[in-house]
Length: 305
Image 1 (cartoon, rainbow, N blue to C red):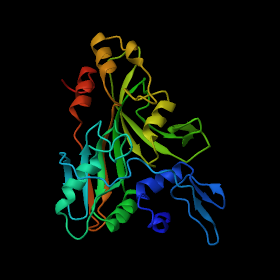
Image 2: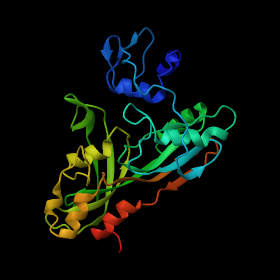
Image 3: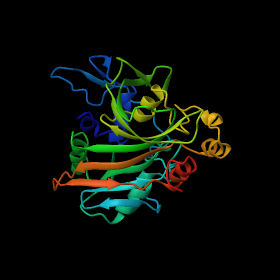
Image 4: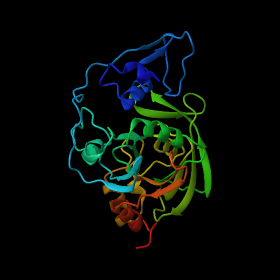
């Protein structure tokens, strides 16, 4: 709703408005709100402290970058994003993003359709991203993704011995007051957040411990899986923000070297089940495990050689 009142502000995209809310730039009755789902009541005064112009505010340019499209129809796409690709242009990444590539794909779309992202992935996370082809489709897909019938599964390779075959992590998340780029977990302060996990395999790292987990998002907070797993003592291999360099404890020098050299967080948005917003059918999409992660899992003897 807030975005509709900012139609005269060209840079007030859906993604940016959400970021402004999370960064505390939006106030209701002079109190900052940080949850996108916050509702204003009749008579409330809503104010926004707009940040200064972003050097990357120039219009996004279509770029002929290949996209791995796993599902496509007239309403939506589901694409398989490689690790290392930024989803949306920003001041540090103005070109080469997933949105630049999607705009190239959309050159031949009709009826004023334009791609927009329904959810995001970190640059160093691979896997599924849902794309709407129009504003009405985006609204409908947001509602579908928030439904209890939607299933979002990730694969995560973590350090540590996960003894439980399955379980859940129920910790609140909030921005780190000392570093707004980070998220911290706590027992009662912040947004309620729930991740369910299942241990799929344990690897050959007797001192560090290695476990392959399937993580299911029940809520969808920023950095949720990464922070939840680290809070339980199971940091994701290669995570530059919440990880730990435990490769030295791997024991096997070949495994240790593979863990040390893995260039990104070992997290993959693997499977999605969502009700199609138009047909009502349940849509199931799976992103194959990328070769870099599959290779690491084979070396760690978590996948067949």
